[in-house]
Length: 249
Ligand SMILES: [Zn+2]
Ligand SMILES: [Zn+2]
Ligand SMILES: [Zn+2]
Image (cartoon, rainbow, N blue to C red; front, top):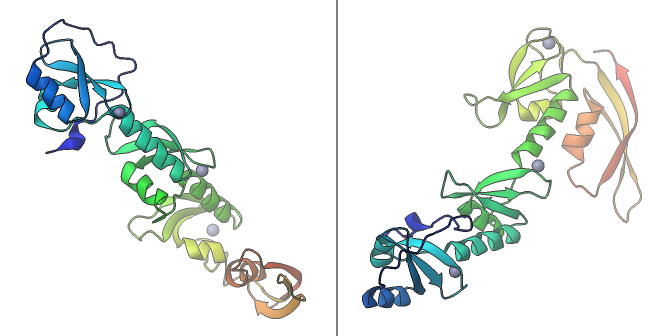
C-alpha cells in the first residue's frame, strides 16, 4: 500500500460540487474502518468528501483511494508538519506544491527555507541542526571580503571544503575555505598573501571567566587569525591583541 501518494492538497479554496448520488453502505463501512465519514459525493462519480474522525476536517478524496488504500487527512498532516516545524525551531509556511516531500519554513534568522519533511523531523528529534544557506553564504562572503577577495561560489570538483573566489586583482582561484579563514594562501596571479606578508611579534591578552587575565607573547604571520581561528575556540573566552609589531622576513 502506497499511502503517501494520496495526501491531497488542502481543499480550502476548492469548491467541490455535490452531485446527489447515493452513498453505498459498504463504502460507509470502509470509510468508518479507516477513520472517516463520507459526507457527500462530489464533482463526478469518482469523488467523495471525507470527514476525519480525529480532527473533524473534511477533504475531497477519490472513491478509488478510499476503497484501495488508507486515505490521509490533509488537515492532520498539516498539523503534524506544523508541530514538527515548531519542535525544530522553525515556522511552518506550507507545503511545496511541486514536491510532496518538501515544505517551506521560516528560519529564526527570518529567511525562508525549503526543507524535506523527514529532515525537519530529524532536526526536531535533535539528530541534526538546521543551517540557513543564505546566512551561511553571507558569512562566507564576509570572510572573503575581510581578505580582499569575493566569494564566487562552490567548487564542486574540489570538494565541499573548497570555494571559488575572486581576488581584488581580478584573478579567480579555488581556495579551501579553511585557508580563506586563516589567510594561509597566496593569489596565484599577483602573489599577494601569506608568504609575502610580514610576520609579527604579538602580545595578546586572554580573559577566562573567574580567572586572572593571561598574556601570551608569540610570533605569527597573522596574529588576527592566530587569535580568532586558532586560539579563541571557546565563545566565553575573550581575547584581544594588545600590540603587534611587524618584522622583516
Ligand atoms: Zn484530520
Ligand atoms: Zn538565514
Ligand atoms: Zn591577486
